[in-house]
Length: 191
Image: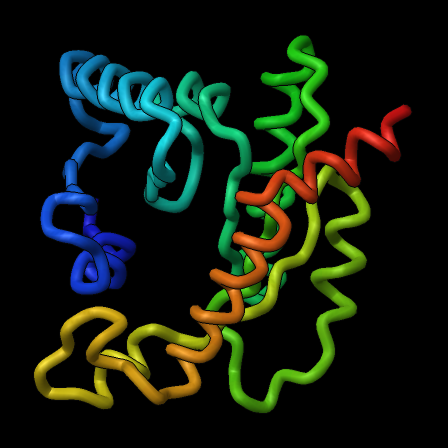
């Protein structure tokens, strides 16, 4: 509902390619049905990427849309206070989609990572419990946002550490998720 992803990518998109639909899980069923229809229509076009950025916490009314997704990006901080609910969230999703026999893993993105962070063993060990892989980390958006009085998404953080991290994450997603390489790797290991 706060539109953070939209705020970042809209300035880099062609006019009208990125749209913000402020729908949260506390909204009525009409809005959820509208969002479901929009996602299904965009997926049928098969010429773009559909990204749904939900708020943190329980799935609420969004759980059925998880089944439309090829991959879930799940950001989490390195704090066990955030990491434990992240693992529980992934377990809940996997339980709900168990009947689908899906092998696509979730992609966990370490978020709000300090510049001094060098070791990711805690998060790596925690992911052994679930069907997930670790993506390149990103630092705190608010630090990047505060570095400019006229913040304008990724354009406003050009040349910063945060921008380089987002670019590296994007390259990872293109190389492994969008290309289908991750699906191929997991399909091979499932056989």
